[in-house]
Amino acid sequence: MNEDIILKYLQGKADAQECLEVETWAQDSPEHQKTLEQLYHTLFIADRADARDRIDTESALRKLKGEIKKKEKESSYKRSFTRFYRMVGMAAAFIAGAVFAGGVAYGLLSDRFADYTVSTSAGQRAQAILPDGSKVWLNASTSLVYKNSLWSTKREVDLSGEAYFEVAKNKYLPFIVSSKKINTRVLGTKFNVRARAEEHRVVTTLLQGSVQMESPIAPEGRILKPGQSMTIDTHTYQAELVEYSSPNDILTWIDGRLRFNRNTLSSITSLMEKLYDVKFVYEDSSLRNEQFTGDFSTDSTPDAILEVLSLTNHFGFYRKGDVIYLTKQ
Image (tube, rainbow, N blue to C red; front, side, top):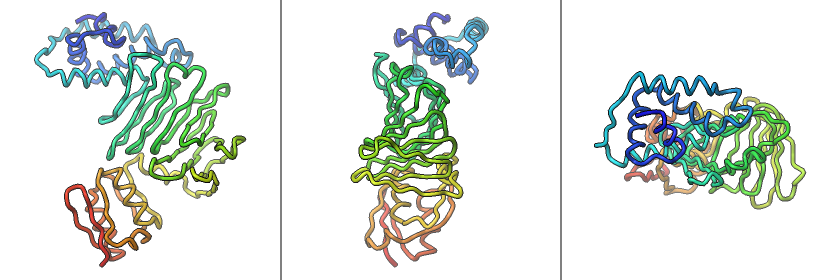
């Protein structure tokens, strides 16, 4: 294998056999994967000033050639083409400018003018890096879409689900998160947006900097300060502002924590459905409004969490496959 094959692979021009060769080499060590990622940046975003600051182009190329000459590796052509297609997904992540966690789905078309999608399914969380270096953490059951080709003139993403953003500063080019006709506009800041498809609201919580919330009835926008959270109803576009003494509590999902403070059982089970890919059925609807306070790890099973909660408010539950039934006691 030589460096030309890797270049073809990153450019989407390699055939199946060549892709398998690159896969073998890349999976040989984390260092090889890092080199592959650096080379991607060199090829696809080195024309951006911020990318040039982050990536040592010549060093990356020298390192790539040195690694290849240092250790020639025989290709394993006996591997199934399932692995090949998985690696195509990996290449898509590089080309989309994203660093990803396991289980994240990427949508990529060979056309550089296509939409790029980063998404997580139930029970998964992930981090992505956008073309300008902005970082995004995606909660479970979340989808983020943007146009890579327009990024140099329009930093805008469409969000469905929940995500935390740390936006690279650019005073000349605002960063916009669009959800259900509601825009969160920033220049450089840290904030969380929740816009679940099944919820008729968009909730933005600001941790650092400032953001402007825009809706069809308030196009001029409303400004948030750190520690504030704004909820906008997606039917009426009425807004509600809340002050948080500990806004970082909103981000416990990033660290794998579930923290409830007088949350209704309905909101808790809705969250657990996304985290654990289960479904809850209430045999007594009055249970939905019961309130709970507690702190759990997302590594805990749904049954373990319910066992603790059921001790405090006297409800029962039983499970049939992926469906959990809640009963009044």
